[in-house]
Length: 187
Image 1 (cartoon, rainbow, N blue to C red):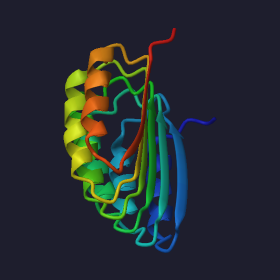
Image 2: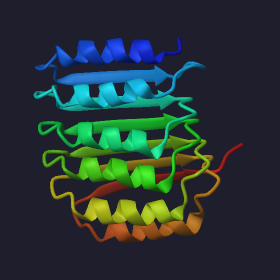
Image 3: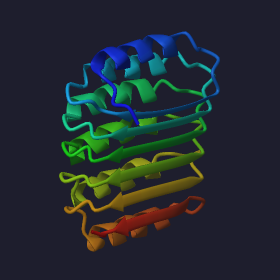
């Protein structure tokens, strides 16, 4: 996999803006050494132009400087995808992600009235804690159309089994929601 630069991310964002009737999009991004996440704002803004998008997959790898502000951008872009039915978002070794950033992301996703399936994965995130899980439970309870929710935490050292158990309990109260939550400590 080639690493993307800010300039490359900006070019990708401009191309996406011209695909208004695209129904399915899958983007896998690996940050380069000099990627400062400036291009993430443009990517987020370009999502709003995808008026027919039904299926979105975004995978971010090694965005070491991915910060809460970047989640605010994604929140705005995701929140405008009115037709999207399925969302799959993953973060691998994006070590600066915090509870606040994850809550911001879910704020945007909560706006997706047609969303049926949501998959989230966090791999080797160091700053996500059990506090984040409480926010996720609150957001999920407000999503009326959602039928399936998968959440994976792999080697996220600040997430504890007790927090996962509490999240499962909270989500279990949403009668029609099928959930799969995985907590893998691994090496």
